[in-house]
Image 1 (cartoon, rainbow, N blue to C red):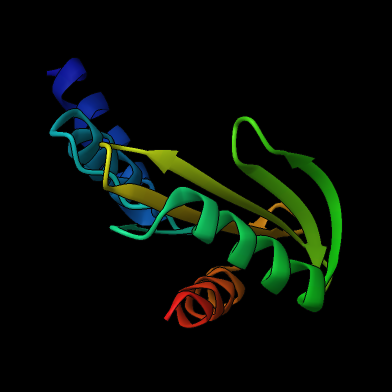
Image 2: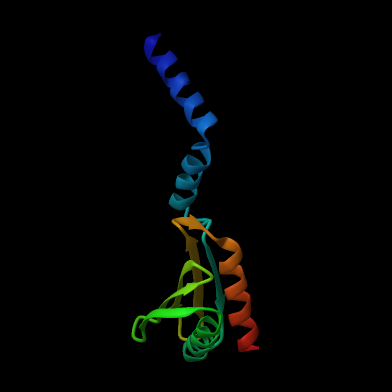
Amino acid sequence: MRTLRFAIALFCCFLLSGCVPLIIGGVGVLGGYAISKDTIAAETEKKAEDIWQASKDVVSIMGIVKNIDEDAKILEANVYGSSVVVRIERLTDVTNRLRVKARKLLMPNIGLAQKIFVKIMQKLD
């Protein structure tokens, strides 16, 4: 009986503290689907080199580029006081994934990530 009460109390603590989405998110990751609060990602059939050039252009206009890794296709920058990471991953010969992550003071800045992502995609068209 004591164990049951402890389990119920623990579940209520999780429920009231906002940790239930974390538990549910963990189950989602096990299923192969993850949602991130600070990253926008999408697949495109544009060439990796074109995406890379558009990313460098957009981020250098919007902020200060801190680190560029040409081989890994990772770009780190400071945009509007937020730490931004742009990553391009080759999925197949014709498909690439663009990821834009933005955080300000360790907190997600999804609005900025979305703004940068959209500008990169617009520059590609």
